[in-house]
Amino acid sequence: MTESKDHHDIEFQKVTKRFGDVVAVDSVDLSIPRGGFFSFLGPSGCGKTTSLRMIAGFDQPTEGDVLIEGRSVVGIPAYRRPVNMVFQHYALFPHLNVFDNIAYGLRQVKPRPAKAEVTKSVGEALDLVRLAGFEKRRTWELSGGQQQRVALARALINHPTVLLLDEPLAALDRKLRREMQIELQTLQREVGITFILVTHDQEEALSMSDSICIMLDGRIVQTGGPTELYDEPANRYVADFVGKSNFIAGRAGETADGHTSIEAATGIVLVGRRPRTAQALAPGAAGVIAIRPELISIDSPSEMLPQEADVRVPARVRNRIFLGEQTEYLVEAEGLGEILVRAPKHAEAMTGGFNTGDQVQISWRSATALVLEDR
Image (tube, rainbow, N blue to C red; front, top):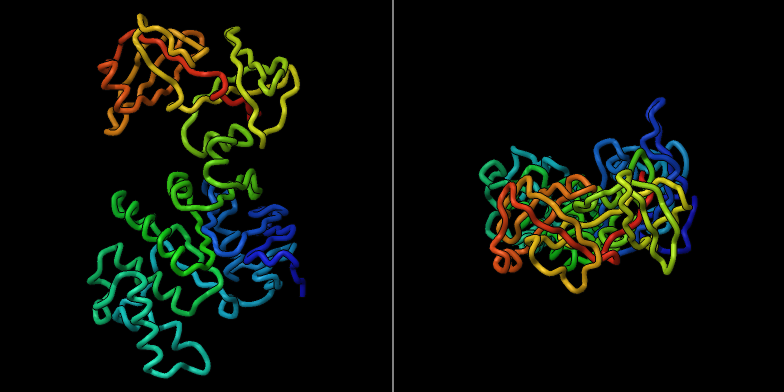
């Protein structure tokens, strides 16, 4: 049995999982620290759910080792691991009321706890998820958010080392999903155990997680905190998957003072900085300039260039979408093609906004543009 010296809650050591000829997880090394909110993020088929299932014990690795609390759990069945899972569709028992659903895990423990202890534990779990007084309700009498809280209480009542969350908010509407994101964050801080979430929703991962692992084709592309992944993406894939970006492809020029130039196909040369997590581009290599829409200003052509901006491009508005707190513009920029711009409400109040067909200028600071590998 392998033991870890690092005392992380979860570790993968060269873990590979194959299903026939399909490699679902490909030689992954990963450490998940104790007591945080960790997310696996990526598109369908990237390996995130398979990774979660290997932690849970529903799948065993083909190669490598999975450790929980420093001890190998390869070959150990799911019911003997110190983890519990909340599924996407909750998997509540419809023939049992709320009390019995939550108490189910305790009643499987040997020796079985006394009735008074079960009642006390269920009451504490209901208080934790803010469902006190719902003990006798049937699960089909509850809203989606309430059902999810019951599933959480059932998963937490045995005090697992790790709680696994398999896209648990996917079935909820947008407003309720946001409310439950906040509740999950609060709950994780209150109980202090490691939460591991699988999701394809980048907004959900960014808003809830302390640390995020972005996967593609069974491998880890980048792991880091939400701010790092957003501001310091390792390549185009990460910048595109986490938030929205404009990408201008071209060939890398010289690098000086941490900034690299990219010459677009139209001959326009733009400059950006290389994130500390990204590979340096050799002169002539394929690369992209990536610019977040909210870092681009949009003004009328007659306006003076903002003092802090050093790039100015004439453009025409192709589409306008009002989003409440901001307005999203799709513009056709001269020599650059389509560029997405997000103008905050206070900026709109100053300019009066723009309509489809208006001639405008867009501008940004080179320091806010990123130079990335085009992959």
